[in-house]
Amino acid sequence: MQALSNRSLPSLSLRIDLDPKGRIGPGKIQLLESIHTCGSISAAGRAMDMSYKRAWDLVDEINRICRQAAVARQTGGKNGGGAVLTPFGVALVARYRKIERDAASAVHKELEALRNDIRHPKKSTERDRDAKAR
Image (cartoon, rainbow, N blue to C red; front, top):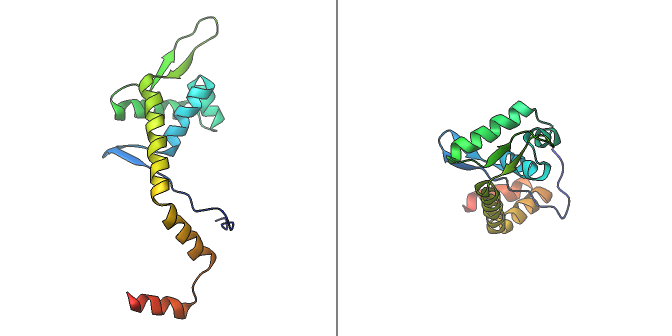
């Protein structure tokens, strides 16, 4: 585990459980963003050091969980195939990033306190006194 610098805060990672077997989190959102940037599922997978099969399985899972397509495949042609985010996919990424920003903002003070606790650990006598005070 890396030591925290004086300035950096611990980071918040957000996972949204949409149903008992399906969730959206930073990896799937990053994959959607990569598809949007790269224009294909295979290129997005390569950019994330992920196999095409794994990338496609995740896209399929996102589409299943959300009950609508977040990614639309484009068939071959002169420039080959590719993939684009659907309007729903673009909105999904934007909404997730907004939820993520709002959550990080809501816990900012607690993350600062955690960083300070890690940077300046209390001595055992102080911990014992604090525990008894509770």
